Image (cartoon, rainbow, N blue to C red; front, top):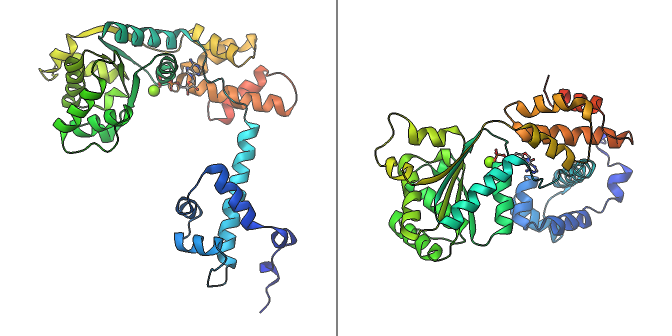
Length: 318
Ligand SMILES: Nc1ncnc2c1ncn2[C@@H]1O[C@H](COP(=O)(O)OP(=O)(O)O)[C@@H](O)[C@H]1O
Ligand SMILES: [Mg+2]
């Protein structure tokens, strides 16, 4: 039975899927297996289709592949339309983070930087890392709350591959690598560490004398100062040489970020400040500025307050 709707369109007939797929594979540096996974077909079918010996009717398979190719191109177009955010702007909050990291590294001391999300903590760490040797940035998650996974995360950050065999062994390997480097170990999202894992970080510092920076939200600090803290956290607490608390993005942070985008909507500074004061902080502000810039570029004019308001609404703000 010939169903008209299922006949391939002219575009589909003309299309050289093999060439398109090969191009994307090269662009994205995907293995055949990874590509098959993204498309949602079996690696065997993928390889047979690429080599031209798929044993069955390829119509269904090619529909899946074409859908993936189209979605990939669509995403690429969208990414091109979105103006790139300035990757680094010297904001006062990020500079405070950088100063704390610099102190910890130079003095071989412990610094703690804590506060809300989206204030430039991680951005500051990355900027510092670009400019200083031997800075290792390990990011914790709920999966790394205990000693062994936390140490493994650190091992990974310092470039030790495949160390295993228990806490003592991983710890020894880390110490061997970082000793005498005058380096700095930065533990980002440190609030995910349980007390024993926090103490394990302290032990790395004690054994090597390298700088240690614990960066995270308010819970990091609360854990060390709370009434029911584990007694051995006193050892860590008493060693903290520098504390930096960031509460919310400052007006100067917001002004610096807006300048970084090269936009000057003086009239809506208060609106931008309000947006940055929301829980997403500068992250939320960056999203709004990106979308607002897109609106303005689309209309071929400078960013206006209306663009910012529209972007804020579009992203679910008030
Ligand atoms: N100094 C900065 N320069 C450029 N962008 C920044 C800066 N600070 C914050 N941002 C923007 O805000 C987002 C959140 O910042 P981030 O450093 O990840 O915050 P935190 O680690 O404090 O949660 C970043 O992804 C970036 O878009
Ligand atoms: Mg962060």
